[in-house]
Length: 202
Image 1 (cartoon, helix red, strand yellow):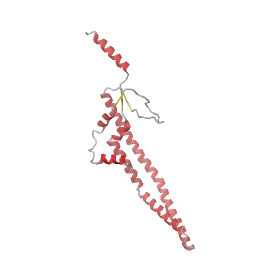
Image 2 (spheres, rainbow, N blue to C red; image 1 turned 60 degrees about the horizontal axis):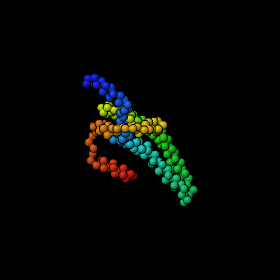
Image 3 (cartoon, rainbow, N blue to C red; image 1 turned 90 degrees about the vertical axis):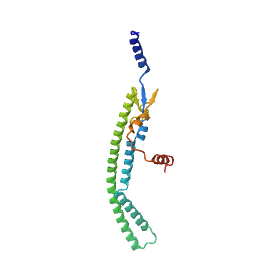
């Protein structure tokens, strides 16, 4: 019997080798959508973008644009006397200069601030992705998988990284469960509100 053990081990090893690698898959996009930190980052980005759009410069820009439009409409009136049209022309010119001034300031300021914000979001997204990769690797190792792949991943040219894979096991839910273990309690009504917004988009 003792002589059979090495043979059993040998043939078992060969059988495993012939069977090929044990592969698991993770839907990274789904994990990102479910991960509470990723959602917080997304909400922060939206809030900061909204704040930029409501900046003092933006308010002033809209105000001066409105003034310019009103004065130009007045200038186009057919009931103005020559003296009134002359005054209206001066007012339109002054309003145009005031608008151009704040518009130039906005055009210089806004793109830079938006670039900073997007750069911050990319950095935070990269950190989140690294966490997902780390946890996916740990789940894969603990369950004895040789490979853990994202079947929906794409290259920089938007070509699929994996075109076909047979006999893979999806461990996405296990990854989501682990990565959200420290998530704060969900507020009542939040899930229903999200579902309602998804079903009835504005």
